[in-house]
Image (cartoon, rainbow, N blue to C red; front, side):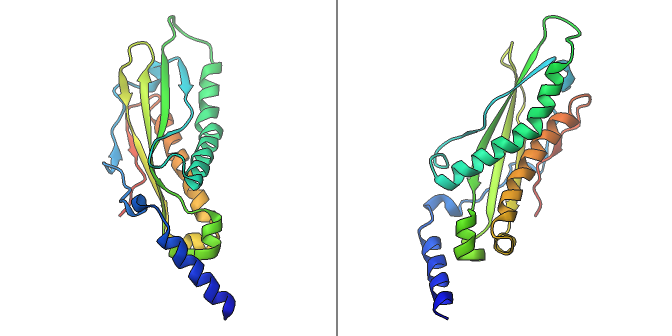
Length: 195
């Protein structure tokens, strides 16, 4: 009973100490991403930039861990695809390059430690990731798709943070899927949003 009381008190303390922006609504601006202005096979080379995250999310320890996890998931998925495309022979010169810049627009990530002590009381994790696809030569923005994922508080509690970490892998997969789906066609792709 004493342990249960301490765990409940710790959960309430974590809830009370969360940043003021933690309750901010995080969702994409559209339900489905528009297609890029050109097919992505128009480009012979691809450059995947590191994941960027700005204030007020940058500098928060749990958010930085989330950014690092998204970076690693993008490296393993989209980064491998980029490496394969860049290894192919260039069919015509000059070879045009597409710069892919991932930015975490908004994030609320619940760490495994918070999940252990506060469980579902810590709330849901959410993330909104945007890709800025730019023609390196002209500076023209080809597309700015956004991707959303969440992990409900109860799922995070049952998995002691596993669902929260899976959310980060899913958002990186959605980003990869957009680029690969629009390589030879212009079809857009889902944001991952669901009511």
